[in-house]
Amino acid sequence: MKKILALLSVVFILGITIAGITYDILKDKNKLPQPKEKNSEVAELEMSTTTEPVSLGEYKKEEEIIYNETNKYRKEIESKELILDFELCRLATIRAAEIQKDFSSNRPDGHPNFYVLIENKYKFKHFAENIWRGKPETAPEEIINEWYNDPVKQENMLHPQIDRIGIGFAEIDGELFVVQIFVET
Image 1 (cartoon, one colour):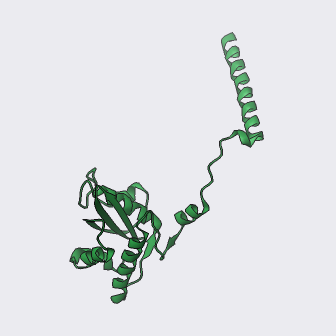
Image 2: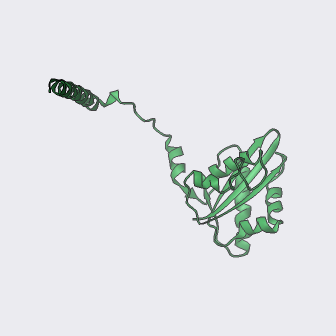
């Protein structure tokens, strides 16, 4: 019985000490580590989708051309304009770096390409991807024309149910890798 009382006393004293520390911390919030403020421009981009091109890097001009050309082809068949999705651009950039290791629809770990969306909790109903590799000096119009002249890649670009696009670039070891990701949300 004495051991139980002693144990309860220790627990009681410990509880009061913890409560006192918690009270002091809550009383003086400056003791708590404060989250870093995000650049408001970055936070705005993370929350938005747009029909205006957004870029994750130095390929803004090329991204804009590929985005506009894709929508030009869609307009010709009276299909809806795609929304350029910042998160999809980020994921397409990941895929662009990955295809340097394995130029296919599989990821380097063997999973299918769409797992990049699943791993990042991006919800979608339909997924398609176009990939390209070549010289960094290749004009974006040449890239889009190559995709458009390939029946499978053209179908990906013109599929009537897709509503969003992400475009990603990676330049690695003197080669350029470009990815378009299309989804229906």
